[in-house]
Amino acid sequence: MLAKTPGGPSWFVVEKGVPGLSHGKPEDKHGIRASNTSTVSLEDVYVDADRLLGGVEGQGLIQAQLVFGYTRLMVAAFGLGTGWAALDRAIPYSKDRIQGGAPLSEKQGYTHKLIVPNAVLLEAGRAYIEETAERIDGDANDGGNRNTEGAIAKYLSSEAGNLAADAAIQALGGYGFTREYMVEKYKRDARITRIYEGTSEIMEMTISRDRWQFHLKTHGQFYHDMARQMEELHGKNNQIGAGTAAYCLRALAETLETARTQRLTRHQHILFKLGELIAHAEGAASLVKKAARSKEGALSPKAYDRFNADALAAMARIAARDAAAKIISESSRWIGSLVPETVAAELEKKSFIPQIHRAQAGLLEDMDYVADVLYERL
Image (cartoon, rainbow, N blue to C red; front, side, top):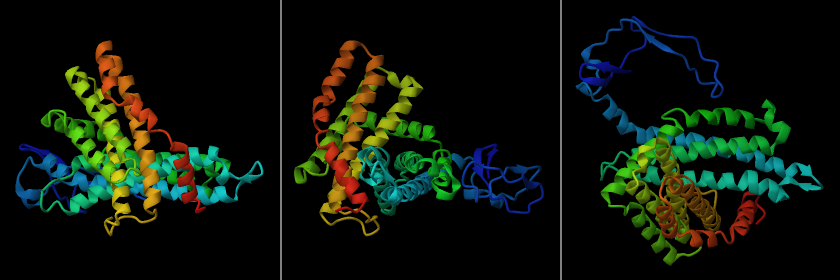
């Protein structure tokens, strides 16, 4: 239990059966219905001093922050798994469902709207989960708690999982709306991942606040440095979307710098939007790095191996294009609309907009290829 004490918020262990501790009836929930959830009540509950975690009052919020990098990564995995479970119902269904004389699986209007984009979003989330988990495994050496990375992983994967589950309902049509076909259950179960361990909105705020500090501390170079890493990868392999990811990250850096000089972070909605853009940019970069490591045969032995190096490269190219297009579009909409015209024009000039537009070339072909991979047509 987290309780207010004279020294500040503090965690206590409260044993089951302690006098004054009770709970309400199980809640009738939208999803995760097999999980028992109810209110917990405390009425004059006494606990001994040795029940105080850490033995010092007022450390509760600090202690909570120490575990968020782990627990949010766990919820990210829930979102990822639920999203893929839904897609893995929609994919075989579309092989058998004949519409207009051919299976749905052969129609771009089906695969390129409902299946491929969601698979790419999920794999960007997975790449970030794996990268963060690998860094946590090595944190005995650098002592980091990975709160920001946990927030990004959770945001990407919970949002992607919900989108994929919703798309799976659409993919099955009227059947998807029935309980017999399961995907409606996946959608209900996925929904909680955008709420617990911090809502998506709290994740956006956490991400933007924390990365904003890095932007300030590095004098605006944090994402330019990350872009240089992408450019180095592009120099080694120009088939994994690293060049596009570099443009994306440089555009993000300029967006943050314009927000700083124009004092735009006083708007809470701008902070939320920056968190969203940061998550997508870093997720795309993470998938690019995973594709690069896969090409080199250097993936972690714990990494998921459903997709080979060529498939990951195609997905990374799509993710980088999507994130870059999102950055320049949303930056113009939310940042450009709040600043003088001359400042907006300067931001556009520095955001590599022509290069990002040209990088979209080949997008449809890559989506065709990923669809062939998902449907095992290669």
